[in-house]
Length: 112
Length: 114
Image (cartoon, rainbow over all chains, first blue to last red; front, side):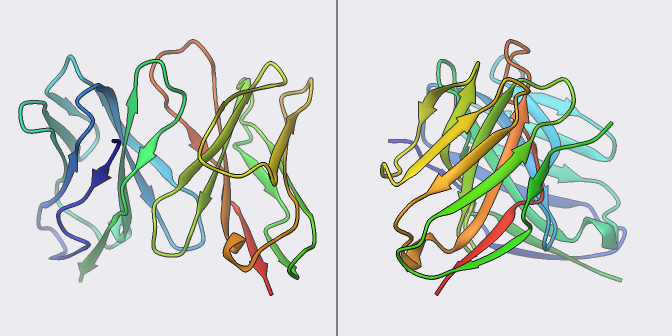
């Protein structure tokens, strides 16, 4: 069945370090993946997305890597800042379906 | 450019009551999805509305119903509230046909059922 999970529920880094948040998915039919950031009291905020015909996509300070062979997704944040502290969710979508399936999330804490 | 707006922000109800939550999509979007987010969990898909019809539904009972209006705004109704319905209810909008499922979320309605 569908399942999107995260390897680590919490991650603590120092300001200025690079952060890597991992995500495993089990639905090999998924062809679209997306990362969201959710701050306390707010809704999820879009960070970056990637389609299954790509293995890497870069944004501003963020990079998403997709390894379809092992069904693994990661979000890399460069030069992590205190404002990056939040819960990060990966979500996947299978073509033909309208829904996103979310994992439980990873809480990122950036220490000054 | 207004983003997704939801009302109310907080709501307290008692078991057995009914509740209506409202959502206005991001300007230019025509599709609205509703998600339930329990504390410490990721959002769970309730249903999606497009062209005023429910296009797809998640694993939620019939107590959860919705509506989409001609201006694309939407309502989520929950009848016979249970304690377990306490959660953050998120509305997300998107533009159909743009490819992918890039959703823009509102800040949610925090529902507490006592």
